[in-house]
View 1 (tube, one colour):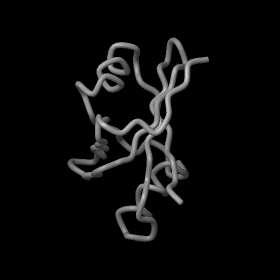
View 2 (cartoon, one colour):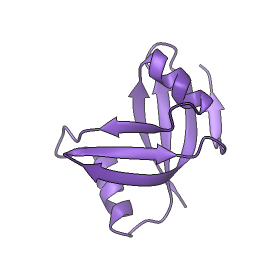
View 3 (cartoon, helix red, strand yellow):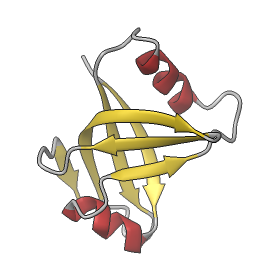
Length: 93
């Protein structure tokens, strides 16, 4: 079973991400005990094999979920990428 990590995105970026024009998010771990980055570490270490990302619009709270295709760590940041072609779910509150 896949784990899901959630991030919030500004309306401008969320729309690009949802439409598949921007299929990644850049995140810097800011809290030592942030469970999202523990899940990422488990994925990178091979302890879990499937991971999804849920992106929430900060204005409308609309969300979508997509399977993560790659996580790259570069210069203190995680680049989290997903496929634009496979939407696991989409909801609008």
